[in-house]
Length: 280
Image 1 (cartoon, rainbow, N blue to C red):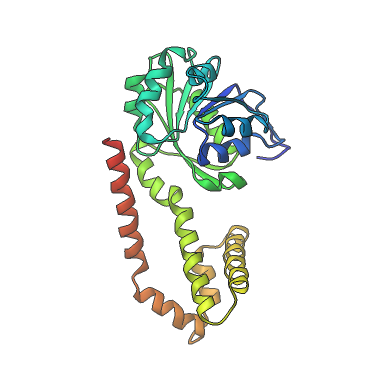
Image 2: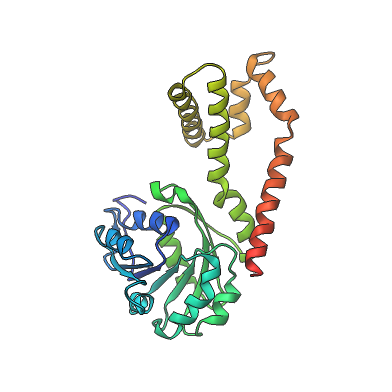
């Protein structure tokens, strides 16, 4: 999305303004997005004041018991961004305050569409999503899944919302937890790899500042090269890996460490936890 391809969004309410909601809000507050009616709730008055300073109508639940109900009044899109265990009570609280035809958008990991639809009136629809934290720089990958009551127009509106902060994949809900183990948790995997390679650079005698420059610059440059070249990662790797050279020797060590199997186990562990969350 660019200034040449603006998007206009209806009134939006964010219930919960943690890191993910703030990341999405950062996209909505960009000049090329026409989203002039944004409300948000947060527990503390201090954080609500911070949101208000950015042009958001903010309510603090610690000082206003009806904050969530006030926020959803008249909102077409209601983004539920509280912690998963808080979702059922929140939905019961707002159910009769939602506008007919409102779309309730979940960003709560592991909470199913069925849970939302069971607790909300039939006059509203539900769309479940899984964004990731690069939303704060407009580089998110967000999985979006329709509920049983959502229309194509509902889904398109939610896709437009998340396109303000990056790319969107529409997938069946049965794939959403698996998607979360890749794009949802993926930034942490990348940061972890950067941490480890930085530590290795320091062990080789570089200062922390030099190590950070080398490693972060290399990851950034490699990602941009991949995006700009249009080539497959394997092909780009082959071009760096000269036969009988130093990189080939290093790749052999990494390959012997069974990284694919390690990622398989890591994502399966994340998927098991997502299913635990879904089960309550």
